[in-house]
Image (cartoon, rainbow, N blue to C red):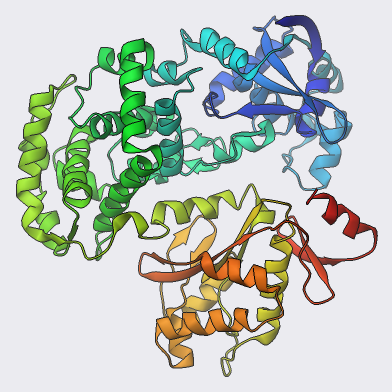
Length: 592
């Protein structure tokens, strides 16, 4: 392993940052978690010319622009603090960085990449202090090594980190099937799914924010299912205790016995070779994909019960399970409910049919079960069996195969969130009927544009996929307009309004199934290539999200570029555009 110590200025590092040459591997890296005060303290040290801890980077190769790219091994929080100070996200001592003193930052602010603070000159750092800040030499060590070596180094550095919670220490630098499954499921439930390796510039979008810290990150802990329903507190999610709860559930299901959830027992399944082999073998026997899907099915079922009728208020589940909880979380009652639901839904292949009675039976469950900081297997078995007894009369044998139930609500929400960081791969259409006050008619021009977009997604590159959602509005103005015209309430996921297609079936005077068949037939009768149409039909998925039906089209690129008649379209960011001439060669290069 070749290690090279060096100094690098804040200015040079910012250039690397904005050129997307500083990478984060989510396989082992945690989220952005520093508070504003921690960021301010670091900037104050730099402004005072005090030394700060070493930053460790691994060389990963060259970018498309011929620049060296680096994976951040240690120092992600510090680097984010430096760059967010430059981009006016916070002040130190009441003073903001003057972006006019950094040409790149100044240009990016004018281009709308970030929003500069609108302050008087007296509230900006003076020219000399800005220059000193930008010229400050950070201690950097870079090394070249295999992925295995990178992960090993990360684990050694972070295994005793002062800022890491016990669960973050367990996950640091571990890449077993078990730890990967914990990461994947936790990210999907929180809503911070992303590519495995991404630029540091994208990390704020998938990091955890809260009302109390207000750092502008993309995922609000307060709005996650865990905190919204009072199962965990915001501090728990920021410290990855949601991942510990997911690990608890995985261990219980895979090992076919409620897990004795003590710190030492959790540590064993991450660190003890014998225990690690035990859980890896158990997951392999169950099937990782099946285990992941089954857990999401149960999670979805609980979410659906919570949102049943008008029972959507904040902390509804906490108040149901433990009315006297106050500010306390309800981790153990939720675990008990989850495992009881798992037994009924997955093991016994049943489904809920009188949800009101299920909810009434769960009132003050916490008072009937045993709990504690370290709870035994026997106590947990007793808790789960008691809960099954309370609710099983309101379940019936399922008439469908759960594992082929289509796209789950949790997956749908994550598709919408992913579209924020990967816009070329996603497109949304509220529907096909006009939104005018006069006669509502099928919009042929809009339908033609949808076909262009399908073609463009088929040109993303060999083996790549795009997703088109019909029944989802990506503009609040359109969502409000649909609500006004069609007298509906559209559930929101971030900036998206799920308006559904039932309303358009009503306008056309047909059933929803007939309307979906109508859309399918229109696509089949278009001039899209036959192979593409066949591919779309085989992967067309109706999604029922909170009572609204959305149609998802999955478009997978083939072996060569796709033409729409004699025209070629591509995705440019989140837009569709027709190309010709030299641009065609670029499209063909994506299929080599």
